[in-house]
Length: 323
Ligand code: BTX
Image (cartoon, rainbow, N blue to C red; front, side, top):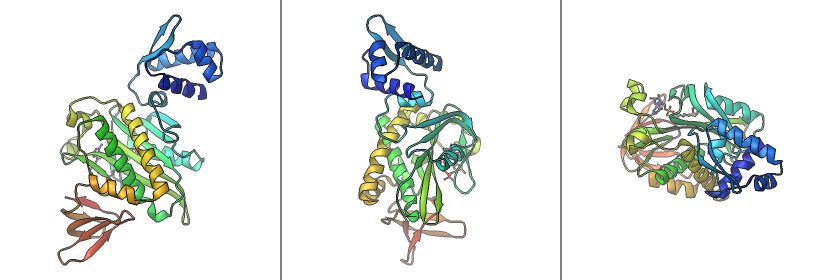
C-alpha cells in the first residue's frame, strides 16, 4: 500500500534514528493507529522493530527476503524499483512482467520472485532458479528508441550488475557478450531481454535478470556445477539479496538515465572495460553456423565484431560465445 511505502521511505531517511508515532503519522498523513497497524504488519513479515517510550520506532533487522517492503527499505532510486510485484513462487517472472507491461505498468516496475518453476534462458533454454538463494527478477522499461537498439539494454544491464557486484564484494566479474556475467570463468548471472512492440515502435522492453547469490555448490544440479557459480561460492560470505537488488536498481537508473540522454557510447566504453573476450580468439555459434576469430569489440550499436583468419570482419547480432 501507499502508506506502507511511505513508512519505509521514512525509516530509510531516518537511518538509525528513532521515529515517533506522532511524527510518522504527520509525514504520512494518517492516524497514529494506522501507523501502529502497519508496524504490526511489518513485524508479521519478519521485520524486527524496536519501540522505545517517548522515542518511537526504529528497524533493527529485516527478514532477508526480497519482498517489496524489504527492497523498499533503503531504496534511493526515482523510478527503477519504486513499484515492485513480489511473488513467492512463479513459473517465470518474465511471463508476469509481460502481463503487467501490457496493462501499462509504470516504467521501472519490477517483478521479483523467491523461486521460478520454469525460469527461462535464451532460445528456449532453462534457467535454474531455486528458492531463497538467488535474484530472479524482470524489469519493465519504456524507452523511446528504435527497435534495433533494444539489445543495447542487455549490455547496459550487464554493466549495472557488474558495478553493483563490485560495490558489494571484492570480486571481479567479467562480461561475456552478449548476456553473461562470469566470475573465475563460471556463469553467475544471465540476462534475457524481451520486447513488446508494434511495427517499429517499442511498447516495452522486459529485462529478465537471474543472479546466483547464496547457492552452495551442491544447490546446483550436476550438469551446472562445472559451468555455474554463485557470489557465495566465490566470496565465501552470504550476501543480502535485497541490498544487492537495491544497488543494481541504483546503478541501473544512473546508466539508463545517461543512456537516454547521451546514447550508447558512454555505456559501450564502460562495457568494453568489463568485457573479458575483447582481443581474444573466440568461437561464435549461431543457430546456422559457427565463426572463429578475434573479438575486436562491439560497434556503437552493441553488435559484436569478429575478425576471422582471412581478415574478414563479421558482425554478430546473436550467438553463443566460447572463449
Ligand atoms: P542463456 O540461454 O544464455 O543461458 C541458459 C543456460 O545457462 C542454460 O542452458 C544452462 O546451461 C545455464 N544455466 C541455467 N541455469 C543457470 C544458473 N542458475 N546459473 C548459471 N547457469 C545456468 C540466460 O540465458 C538468461 C537467463 C535469464 C534468467 C532470468 S531470471 C528472471 C527472468 N525470468 C526468467 O524466466 N528468466 C529471467
